[in-house]
Amino acid sequence: MYQDIIDTAREKMEKTREVFKRDMQSLRAGRANPQLLDRIMVDYYGTMTPLNQMANISSPEPRMLTISLWDTKAIPLVEKAIQKSDLGMNPANDGKIIRLIVPELNEERRRELSKKVGQAAEESKVAIRSIRRDAIEQIKKLKKDSVITEDDQHKGEEEMQKVTDNAVKEIDKLAAEKEKEIMEI
Image (tube, rainbow, N blue to C red; front, side):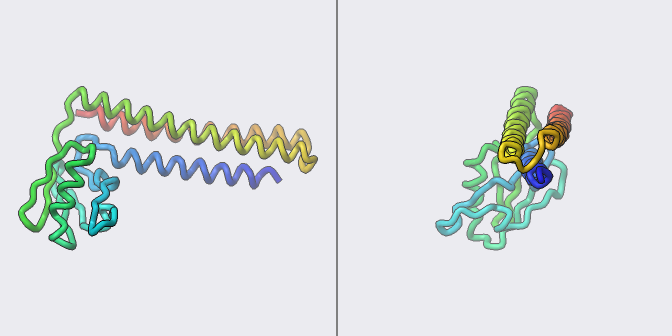
């Protein structure tokens, strides 16, 4: 009976981990990575459109991204969106393709990004603990309503704690990998 609650909580924790992983991919670590531009939204004919739905983004060199727009009239709009973003890159275009040079990260910027990783990891862990708390409350309600026994309640709470610990370990592992990548020179 309580297993459904734990399975649902596990799925929610997995989604939290996936969101964290996606956020880490869009953090700049000194290398050109097309996912850096995943969060860029362009005001395209009055509609906020994700850049990756308007163009082909590739990384022909380790420190360069190229953006081939399907509608070349949107080049100024895309340049404006990139300049407004927190990427700190200046786009250059030749009328057909936008080129972005990914600058080297200085020590201060590396520490700043490392802090961002830590904050994002902590936010994800808080979300996971919140999911655990909700699941344990549901299990306690089953016990209160006499649907499960006290032993089942304890088993359910223990299993929920194990699931939570694994999810937190995964977040910590992803954060450590990203911090290592950022601090790499």
